[in-house]
Image 1 (cartoon, one colour):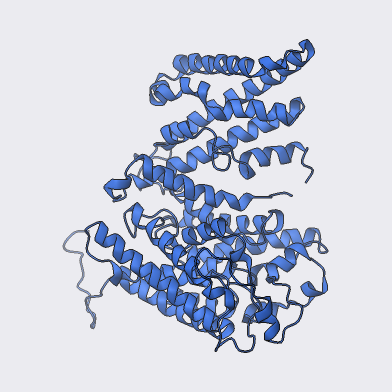
Image 2 (cartoon, rainbow over the protein chains, first blue to last red):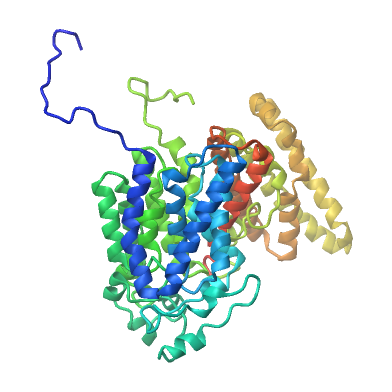
Length: 357
Length: 193
C-alpha cells in the first residue's frame, strides 16, 4: 500500500487492547468450571468437595515443587495447575480414595507437564495423563460408583474416600444401604448400556436425567447442561475453539447414529451417547486444551472428529464402557502428525513444492 | 467378531496387542529411529516387508520341520530366515535409496535382532495360524509397528522444540512419552470382542 492511499481512521477509545494472556484464559476456564464443581458437590456431597480440594492442592503443590527443583520462577500464578487439578478431580468417581487422588495430581503435573518443560511444551493433556495413570494403577477403585443425591451426603463422607494409603478401601455397600437405597448395582449409565443393554435398568435411564445430571458417574461428567454453559461462556469470550467440541460431538453423534440405524435393538440412541459419560466434559474442557490440540483449522476438524469417532468405537466395540479419556490421549498423540499434514500452503508457493520445515 | 477371522487378527496385532506399545517388543528401533517422521515411516515400511517375508517363510519352514520331526530347530531356522530377509531389504535399499540407507544406519541390519519379528514368527506358530491368517497377522503387526513409530516420531519432532529439563533430555523423555502412549493404547483393549 502506498503512503498516499493510506487513510486515517478515526475511532473512539479504547485504542489499545490487551491481548489474551495465559493466566487470563486459565482464570476464565476456572470460572467456567465453578458451576460444574458446585454441582458435583451438590450431587455427591462432602467427598466431592474434599476430592476437588485434594486434587487441586496436590497439583498446585507439585507445580511449586517442580518449579523449585528446576530453579525457575514459580508458575503458580498462571492458574494452569489449578485447572489441571480441578479437571482431574472432576473425572474421578465420587468415592475415590483421597490418597490416590493426591498421587494422580502429582503424576499429572510431574509426568504430564513438568518433565516436558512446563506449560506449553507438554504433548498430552496433563489431567488425562494423571487419570490414565490412576485407571491403570487402581482399576478397581476407579470403577466404584456411588449414586447421586443420596441422603446424608453433605454431612458424611463416602467411607472409601478416607481410606488409608495402601490399605483396602472399605466397601461402599453399607453406606449406600444406610442412605435408604436398595439394590444399588454400582453402575454408571454407560456400564448399564455396555453390560446390560435392554434391561429394565437401561430403560430407566432418560435423556433428561443424563442432561440434568441425576445419574451416577464421575464428579463432573454427570450434568451436561452446566458443562455446555461453561463451554458457551468460553466460546463467547473467544477463549476456546468452538470447532473442537462441535467436531467431537458431531463425530460421535454421526457414528453412533450409523450404529443405531443399523440395529436399534443392540445400540443406544445417539442422544444417549452424546449426554452419557465423560464425552461432554472431554469435548468442552479436555480436548480443547490449546497446547495439545492442532494449530491449523483443518487440523482442528480432523483432530476433533477423530476423537469423537474413537470414543464411539471404544464405547460400542471395545472392552471398556468409557473411551473418552483414551480417545483424547490418542488425539493428543496424533496432533503433531495432523499439524504436519494440514500445514496451509504458503501464499504464492506452488502446489507441488513442499514447504520447508 | 470371530477371533479367527482375518479382520480380527489384523486389528488384534495392529491395535489391541500392538507389538510395541502393549507387548513391548521391538523397543530398540522404536527408540532409535523415531527422531524424524520420514525415517520412521520408511523404517516402518521396511519392517512390514521383513515381517511379511519372514512370516511366509516361517510358515513354510514350520510345516517342513514338523514333517521331518525336527521342531527343536525352529528357533535357529527362524533366526536364519529373518537375517536373510533383512539382508535382502538392506541390499534393496542400498541400491535404490542410498539416502535412506544412511539415515537408517545401524538400525537397518539391526532389524535382524528386532524381537518384534522373531516374536511374530513364534507367535504365529504358537497360535497355529494358517497361511492367510499368518499374512494378516504379519501385516497387522507391521502396520501397528509403523503407526507406533510414526506417532512417536511426530511427538519427538515437536519435543525437539520444547524446553525440556536437562535431567530427562533424550532417551529418558522418549521412554516417558512411550509409557504415556502405551497408557493411551490401553483404550483399545477388548476391541471387537
